Length: 477
Image 1 (cartoon, rainbow, N blue to C red):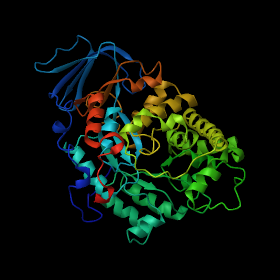
Image 2: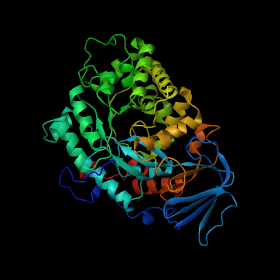
Image 3: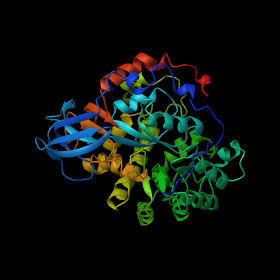
Image 4: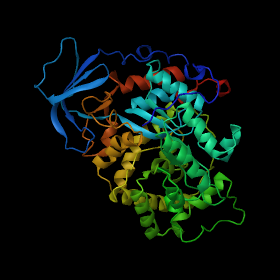
C-alpha cells in the first residue's frame, strides 16, 4: 500500500475532550485488570488460531511487548523469569474479534466492545475529527479501547455539500489526505462512484458501502455499483433489492425519501418480489470481482424482526446503553414483523450462498443502536450459523476475513507469531457451539490482560445504568 499523507480535513483540537471523560485516561489507570508485565505465557489451552486449521490442544503461547512471540506444545518452551502465567487448561483460545461496521462516536463504547472480546473495530461514518484523534490516542495507549480503523463520513450529496466541496471525487481526495483507512459511500451515481474508486485505489484504499435504496435514485443498485468498482457491499438488503422482479407494492402515500417508509413498506415487504436466481447471478458477479459482503444481519433482526418484543425490550445488557436514542421507526405490528422474518430468511439465504460461492464474507454489526456494541458480534456469528455456515466459518468471518478487508492480515485476525497479541480465552469450545464465544474468561488486547467482568463494572461506575451519568450531548466537540 502506498504511503498516505496524514493531513487533517479541518483544523481541529488534537485532544477532543468529549472522548476524554473522567476515567478514560492512560490504559493503566482505567482498568484494574489492564496492568500486565511485558512477558505473558498462556499455558495449556486449546488454540483455535483463526487460520482454519484444526484446533491445537495443550499449547503454550509466549507474548512479549504486545506481540505473539512463540506458540509451542505445552512443555516445549521454558517460561521466562518474571512472566505472568495464565492457566488456560480446559479453556479455548481464539483471535481477538473484529467488528468491521460500527459507528464509534461515544466514550461509553470503549469497555463494552473489549468486554465482549472485540479488540478491533472499523468505523463507518462518524465524525472525521473525532475518529482520527481517537485512532491516534488509542494507538498511543492513552485510551483503553479497541484498535480503530477510520472511514470518515460516508460520501453522498449531503456530505459533499456539508463540506463545501464541489464533487464526490473532491471529497474522496480530502478523505485520503486526512488519513482514512478506507472510503464509505452512501449515495452516488455510477460516474461518481468510478471517480471515488479511482481516487481510493490510486492511494491503496478500498471503497465500500450502500448500493441503495434504488427507489428515489439514492444509488444505482448492487450490480451497477460492482461494475463501477465498489469493493464491498454493506447490508444484505442491497443484494435483495437488485434481485427484484418488480417494484414492491407500497401504499399510495409512500414516500421514498422517508426512512420510516422505506424500512416499513419497501424493505420489509421485499421478500414478495425477490427472484432467487437473480440473487445467484449477483453473488457470482460479486465473487468474480472480489467484492466482499457484510450482511449486518443482526442489525435488521434487532431493528425489525424483534422490534418492540420482550426479547429486545427486556435485554439485560440494555443497562449499559444510555437511554437517549430516539425511536426512529415506531412500533411494529405482528404482521409487519412477520414480513420482516420472510425478508430475513432471504438475507440469510444470500449470506449462505455467498459464502458457499467462495466470497469474502465478513462480520459487521452496524452497532451501536438496536445492535448492541460488542454483544452483536456474537449474535451475528449465531445468525451466520443459522444460515448454514459452520462455527469455524463464522469465526473466520469475524477474525481473518475482517483482517483481510482491513489489509492487516499480516498483523491481525489470527493467533500466530509476530502478530499483535489480541486474543480471547473462552471457557467452552466455540466449534461445538458458536454461542460459546460469549463465555469469555479473559481478553487480551495488544498484550494487556483484561477481565470482562471488571470492564463492565467500571462502565457502570463511570456512566451509570442506562447512561444516567452520561454527560450532555450538546457538549460534543
